Figure 1: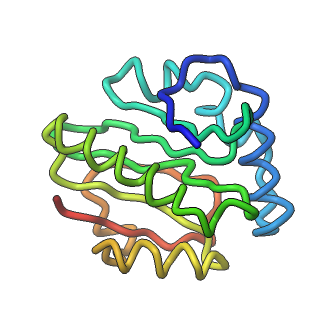
Figure 2 (figure 1 turned 90 degrees about the vertical axis):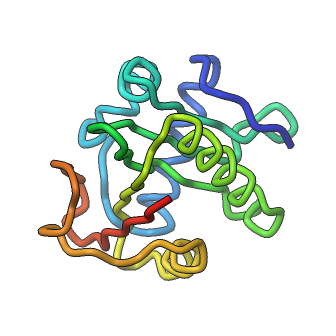
Figure 3 (figure 1 turned 30 degrees about the vertical axis):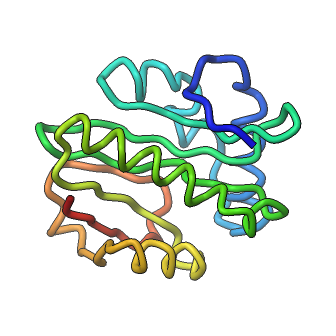
Length: 157
């Protein structure tokens, strides 16, 4: 397994992995059109100073994570997904560590994220990593998310 920064090489695989996990596993019913960042990852993440990583195993995408820089010192973690068969292999942790290392290098002080209320395993991961639940009123920057049945988290670095 290796982790790469986004280059445009695996666009269809990235979209397929994310939509499959969102809609087949989590049953949250999100369309690609509701997630315009997936249609232009370079513009949505990299062009503004953020980054997007993919985990590759045997030549295919098995995980993703993105960091979207917002206002000074604040970023949003998005699209953190690992294919079910690879979750026990610490791929998620490797992706997350890349994101944290990058965030620190960019002088990010806070990372926010939204996650579906049904994603209990994800909640445990975030809370173990030091994220705290917040309310929409506690968001440090304007931030919209497509799944209104989400839990919001914040991590201060």
